[in-house]
Amino acid sequence: MELLDPERERIQEDLRGLIAGEVYCDDLHVQLYASDASIYEIRPLAVVRPRSTADVVAGVRYAAEKRIPVHARGAGSGVAGESLGPGLVLDFSRHMRRVLQVEREAVRAQPGLVHERLNAQLRPGGRLFGPDPANSAVTTVGGMIAIDASGSRWLKYGSVRRHVLGLQVVLADGQVAEQGSHDALLARNGRYAELFRLQADRFTDELIA
Image (cartoon, rainbow, N blue to C red; front, side, top):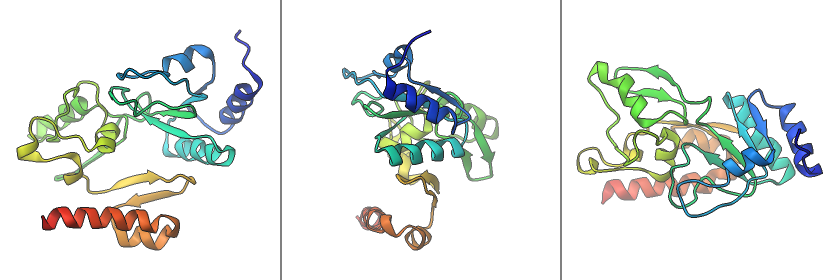
């Protein structure tokens, strides 16, 4: 059995008492999550594989309380080190990878769902999620949203943000916000008001252009 240093042992014990998913602080898992498709290597302090939004909230709140940075990870296919960092890695690709709801003109999916698998489930109904990243077989929906992915079909479908109707977001302090109506978000999340106003202004400028 591997002996952890006191800090990692404490973090592992704390998080395992809060989270239903897996928590790892051992050298093997830390090293596995120290790299992605980029040239960089950064060993995280801990790895969490959340099973639900409640797990994400618990992990983010713990990290905020202990002043530990949080790094979201999907497939780890980014070439700029987007999913790497020295803090708490939240890996959405293990458990949070399902299609939750399919409607006539919309689909609700978890962030760890692979793009190719999403389209495989939509295909029988004659539909698809148009943006097509180069690594569609591994790229996750959350990662596509994070970088506003587009791909070779951009002229027809545009980038991901044109197709996002709403997002359930866990904010830096652990609050859960349904990001759809900016007015509702501004009313509920005063600390993030300026961020949401900037985002709204950006979309408005692009529509006008």
